[in-house]
Length: 76
Image 1 (cartoon, rainbow, N blue to C red):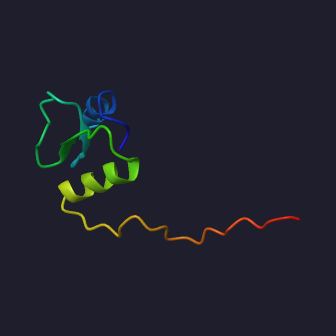
Image 2 (tube, rainbow, N blue to C red):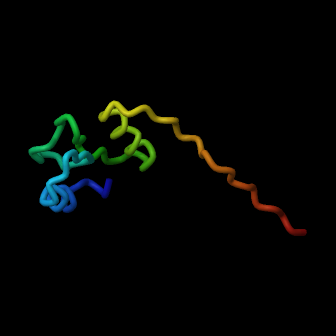
């Protein structure tokens, strides 16, 4: 999952993986295929990657943070 796939998709295909999935640009031959989703512009990065998970039928856990994120302490 690197950007819109304009560079890495062709490079990764040369490695002949058994499976490859990710984003692609509008007009790319991969658009709306089983493993590729047109790169959604104008949405938050978290929503963008969740959209890819949904496209791949992979369940997600939402947008909450799974690790503790302590609140900063105030010094007076």
